[in-house]
Image (tube, rainbow, N blue to C red):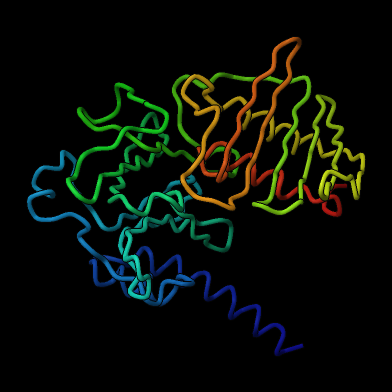
Length: 304
C-alpha cells in the first residue's frame, strides 16, 4: 500500500515539476534541455535557425525557435517549439505545441505530415483575450511564401504574409480560427473513413436527437452494426465543432500527393441541402481533424 501511494506521489510530483520547469525556462539552452529530457520522442531534437541569415533579415516577423504561453486558458504554461531531429534522414523541420491537459501534457504537431518540405514559422498573438497561433510555411529553396490551402487573408494578419493555419483552443480541441464561421447545422451527418488501401470502412450516421448508427464494413460487407445514443454533452460538442467550419474557405476535396493514405468523408444534411467534404490524407484543417478525433473516441464500447 505504501509503495502504491509513493508511486502516485511520484507521478504527481513529476507532473508538477514539468509545469514548474516550463515556468523556469529563461534561455534557449534551458528550453532545449527541457524538450530533450521531458518530451517523449524528442531525445534527438535540436534547435535550428531553419532560415539563412539573409532570409531571416527579409522575414517580416521575427523567427523564434520557441515560445511559452497559456494557449488553452487553464493558467498553466504551454510551449511551442521549432527545430529538427538528428535521426531524421530527411532533416525536415518540425513544429510542435506542448499543451497542458489537466495534470498532464500532450505533444501536438503544428504541421501536416506532408508539410515537411517547407520552413515553418510560428507566431502568437492575443485577440480579444483569445490566444492565437499563426503557422506560416516558406519554400526551402527560395523562401517564396506559399499560398494558404484555404486562401485566407484577414485584416489581423501581418501585411504580405499568407497564413497556412490560424489555431485557437476551443471545445477541448485545437481548431482553425475563423472570424466568419459558417455556423453549419445538420438534421443528420455521416462520417466515413476508408483506411488506406485496405477493405476496412468505418461509418457513423448521427441524427439530431443524438442517435448514432455505427457500421464496420469490410470489403463492401457490413460485418458489425449497432445503434447507439451519445451523451447530450458530446452531441453538443460535435454541433459546436461543425459550426466552426468555414465552408467558404475549406478545401472541399482535399488531397496530398502520396499513396496508401486514409480518406475521411464528411456529409452534412440540412433540409434539402447537402454539404460534402472529402479529405484524402485526413490533414486538411485542424477543425476537421478535431471532428475526426471526436469520432475516433466514439468506439461502440465507449458509448453509453
